[in-house]
Image (cartoon, rainbow, N blue to C red; front, top):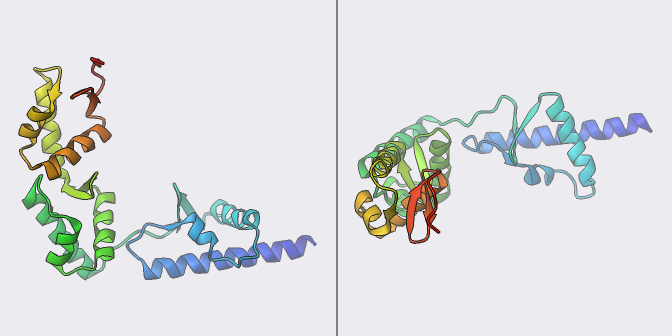
Length: 208
């Protein structure tokens, strides 16, 4: 009985490893496969508990690594081929040139002749590398542009307790299309927080 269970678990582990290797081969830019998707590679009649046990054993053996909800082979690192590396450099250069007024992903895809899904893989990779920053509204900014805005906002709070919306927009110096997402982004980055109709420095005293 025990030997049969051990053989079945080993079979499940081999299926999971083969599926993960196939995924990395097809999607080298992706950091990992969602756990639920990896579990879905097993036959429908495999109990969830058995699938989870197989993954736990693989992780304990150091063959796979879980990062949040993603699973990858231990040796896997997202990598760029020559063409993708060239496209990534173009994206970063364009983001730096555009500053706080970047194109939409749709416009970027058309500009560089990239399939929308592939563009998003490249953008996500550059975000993980710390070269681009994603803001609400599906906008992608260069790290330098966002850091420059952070410095402006921090400088404002050196002589003021509040930052109203109109002053904030003037400080950003962009259209509403990017100004509002940037305000939300700095909230997410814990630089500012909303207090009624104004924003205050994170850690500042609310006037509510």
